[in-house]
Image: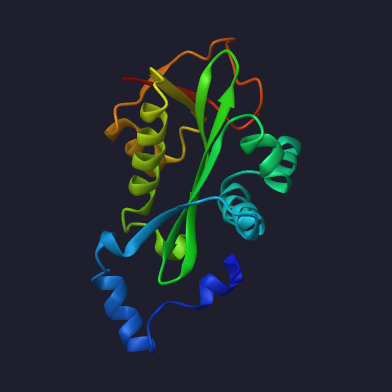
Length: 184
């Protein structure tokens, strides 16, 4: 299985000239396939998320717990994990965390830095929203940080709106300074 480090050094191109051309004119978004979680992607889920968390923030205890055991924290509670596969490589992920009282939380979304700007995050969010709607939910929420401007823009594009944290601040993450909701 390819890791994030491997992904950073590889592309589905043959040489440097092709790599540059591909970056300037990326393949269509249709080449990105969204797939469900499978145990063989456990480590990639962790690595993709650690990549952005370590770049912008510091890893918190809850991050380590959730990323080390996604089956327990996401799947066993009724949640879902999705992956973006591009050129047979996992290049992005997002999760839906099921809360008993609050419904679903859009969580742990990340795209490897070498594949950002291709619309992969958009495709992941659309898949997550489609899943939540198919379950008959009336909406979902997320916690993020306002310095993640591309993510904030993406969420707002889908109709998420900023609102106050239900208990005044995040109950889970020190880095979260923004609470957003989307109602269907």
